[in-house]
Image 1 (cartoon, one colour):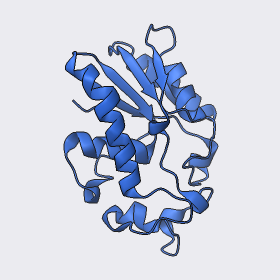
Image 2 (tube, rainbow, N blue to C red):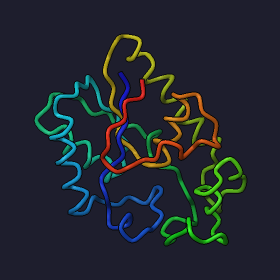
Image 3 (cartoon, rainbow, N blue to C red):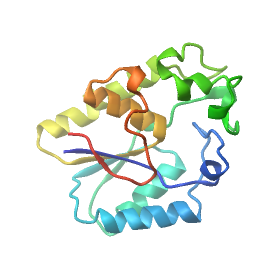
Image 4 (cartoon, one colour):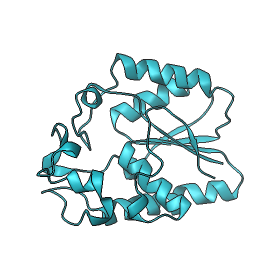
Length: 183
């Protein structure tokens, strides 16, 4: 089985600031969410966990899997999408003048990322390579795999696993610390 979960809340989540690759930590609520998820999913079996190397994901994985003998492998391909010069912007999904507004409201037409940002194609290429190289062989062996990541990065994996196009990028929603079974 393949499972995916998004990190717990951060101060930037609470302030509606675009995090992207900015390396933030879980806040008190995020730690509590991860602890509650640990309890809620304690009976779900995982053979291995792949995790983004960003602190908020690492902290979530550590709390979620505390006391369990599950190896955690950090992989740069699981970092959140890079939003370049827009990282740190507040409420960008509410302001049409924001360079990333289209990404949140109409991802199929997110054609021009801000300076230094990653394109949808680049995101899908790296997460697709990760699935093919790291996850698919383990699933073929019957292993249970957990991915701990981020909103946009997780959405790209969900789209690829479910065979969806970019227009359905946000279809499943990516709540903090809610486990999704993908296949």
